[in-house]
Every structure is written in structure tokens, then in C-alpha cells.
Length: 228
View 1 (tube, rainbow, N blue to C red):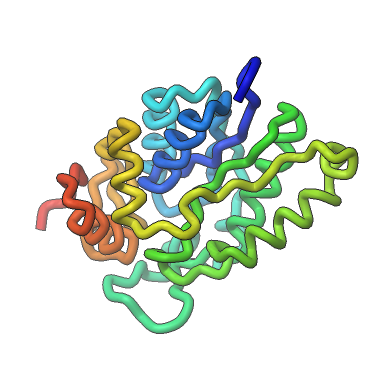
View 2 (cartoon, rainbow, N blue to C red):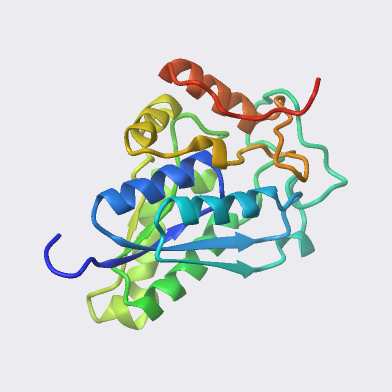
């Protein structure tokens, strides 16, 4: 990129994937504005992690927007009456949060228009993931089409591009990429059922995918787990 860096909104959950996306966006030359969403999730450890990652990852700003998806429930991540499963199950798991990425990207789209951002960077992945429908290429393509017609910037021809650089990468490839860019994964929290200190359960799908990824990448796993 030439001249002043173009602004980008980076959706930052505090997990492994979004930390890598922040590093990739900075490496691409974007002036990164991190955006986290407090959506009524089971624990606040990931939001605390997001603040750490934003500071360590060189984000120019970091803000958190609240939207209480727990008011509609329907997911183990927003309804404490639904247990987080400890083993993979066929189909879309109960940890899927209805419309979560649609809501997140919609908020990011509004923020991007305010910033005149050229990109919205999101860490969705369709390779090593839990099968969520809003982590697939068709969803990203559809949201891009929406963004192009839903905002003043979009209809004037300078709306943001939805960038999902992890979409076709394995978890191991994501970890290798982030490690090469200096990401400190010890700052991140990926567990669906972490305790208030951010210690991982070691049993949920997110923990399994994370551990498998570090193992396959040949990178030391810095995750702190709850005592057995």
C-alpha cells in the first residue's frame, strides 16, 4: 500500500483465529481498528483476551459493542441451561449461536462506514471448524453482496471488502502463519467453557481444534488448562 495506511475494522474475539487475522491485517499494511462484541456469551475471559491481543497486536483502537444475544438464547454459548458438549456430534453443534456472524458483520459494517474503512477483516474458517453455516464461503460472499447495497459507501462504490484470510486454511496453517508474524497465542482464549481466569476446559470442540492445530503445526501450545 502507498501513502497513509487504509483503515480496516478487525473483528476481534480474543481467540486464536482473530488474533492471527489482526496480525495479518497489520502485515498487509492496514491501520487496524479492533472491534469486539459482548453478545452475552458464557464468560468474559475472551473479551479480556481481546483487549490484551489488541494492545499487543498494534491495533490503533479497540472498542467493544454490546448486543445481548443471550436474550434469544438457542445456543450453549448464550444459555447456561444448555451444556457445552464435551465430544463432537454430527450436524451443526449446539455451540452455534443463531445469526452471530451476521450480527457481528453488520455492526462492523456500520463502524467501517464511520471510519471510511476499506476492509472488514474476520477470522471465519471453513476447514478446521465446527460446521457453523456462518463460517462458510457462501456466507461471506452473500454478506459482501449485502454490504455493497446496504450502505452509502457501498452504493457510492467505495464500501469495504469483507476479508476472510483464514477461510481456506487449516488450523495448523493458521498457527504457523500467526507464529511467523509474532502472535503471542498465550494471550488468547478459545475455550467455549473457560473459567474467569481464562483457563481452558480441554474438552470442548474449540479446545480440541486448538490443541490439534498446535500439534499438527509443531508449535508449543501455550494454553493454560483447568486442573484435571
